[in-house]
Image (cartoon, rainbow, N blue to C red; front, side, top):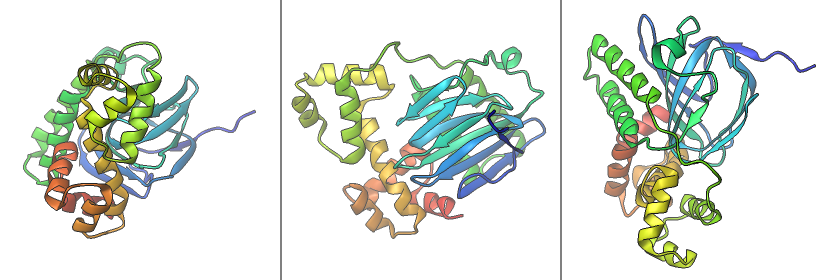
Length: 270
């Protein structure tokens, strides 16, 4: 007989850095950073959790199976659903929304129990989440405005399309692995795979929900996150993660997280 999962309250600390950025009457928002290689044993929460994986990697196991994610994705876990997590070599940066277990996800958002993670056509939702995160850290919004923006984000989560069905082609898997490791020129990569650049770009976007250049930039920032978490100088982070310079790092950080590298470093070390 398996042991019962550990139950966590919505304000429980999970991972090395977990910051509550908003607490309202019916929902709460948090930013969580999980270090590379971190794992969480089988556990459950006493609230519904909707999570937007902004950067990093994630492997999650539930009773419905296993999900492996290496690109932005969004997911929902009903209160009480047991799951285990492995955050892989890149760690993970997440924006999460917690709802009480009494909130009816099906009636209010059209989200059924079968939905776990989605990873396709997320660009509008990512822009929305990054903009909200940036405004929260800049303290630009009143509490009522934050509450409204979070409900808008939830509505967007509920309406996101699924990615194509079936198994991704082998070349795409190899391509993603390569881009996660190094900043290889995309035309060179397409040539190595024996693919026309146009076909390469279209097929990549269809399966991954973003252009290859966006995936590559995100992978660079993922390599920078552990360095920022350790407090490295920004110029050193830029050089070691494969950016052209510190200004390049700043542009990519703002575009993909809504925060400057300095603010990201402060968040990850909080």
